[in-house]
Image 1 (spheres, rainbow, N blue to C red):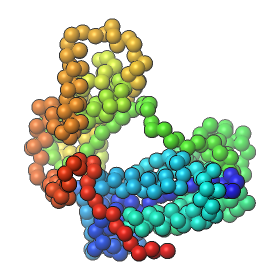
Image 2: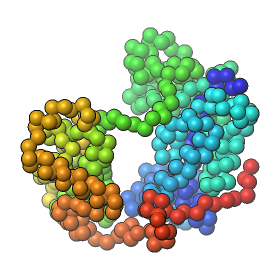
Image 3: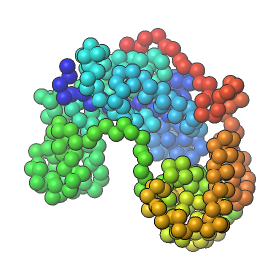
Image 4: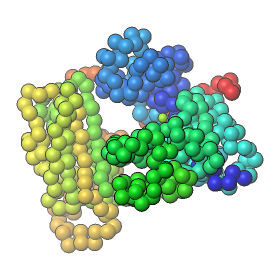
Length: 428
Ligand SMILES: [Mg+2]
């Protein structure tokens, strides 16, 4: 029914701020931002954007531009719950959904058009209406021939817009799109193209395939094909099972310069990233640490681990060494980030059997028990003693549990908070 124009991209408008407004109707129509705990704006409502407040801006600058700004701390549990609800609504239209990020998804409508019996315009409109009515959020929708084109379309009319682009109208959109705005064209590629006088996405598609391949290699060539309506990027529906690297970072406010505190923060990230590593059944070969100063500059270093491992106890001495190399006494720090590199899936390492010693076996048993306890009682219920130094951090508003924790119903974990669904009058 739709021919090859079946790829849909949906993107929530100012998602985190939108969720806050959905949860608290008093905030509707007001300029709202999130990110109070970091001092930088993580998300801005469209009312805030209209006043010149954008993501990434420092809070004091934003307040100077917009004194009536409502500044909220991030509430990621609420955002992830709304994210799941958004994707569940999308799955009523088609089972073929790729959850691309917390507030963006691709879907393939092929085969479901006849079942729904709707024109594409009505599919997009009904999706937007349903999300608005059930979640109190606005989303923008694009439908076209490929993922790359659908993503351009969803951004074309924002917020609360929809754009459907069929093959015979491709040039209209591509002419108006700067090449740097195309999904997959990074700043380096954009600079190379601009140096050759390629300004719009349409100029880009007019290049020869051979030239594109020479200049930008395979990824650029694939984007070039997608822009012309040739499908290269498939929907990735399966949850990811193989990882090359993993990281955990945490910003603490106010910044601190006590080495015990900063190290404890890094150790907490180490514990968290290793818990994730074990959950996804991988081993790591390399450990990295980044310390971010209060002025946002940062120093980072990495080192190989003594052996591929999934046990934080074996990585702890390496973390200590990296920390000693990076930490400058007297400097205030605001964040630490720990990453693991050179990952490989656990099941590929038969050789591990031969490196087994009673001590390693004991430590593994300990890690299993700790993971099980943390899985049951919450991350951090059991943690290395080094983490106790996190108590050195001065108290901050974000440390207090949100009031709705207390309002949890029997049987609800923190992951299933009782957040009411709003039902609004039909907005369309
Ligand atoms: Mg968005």
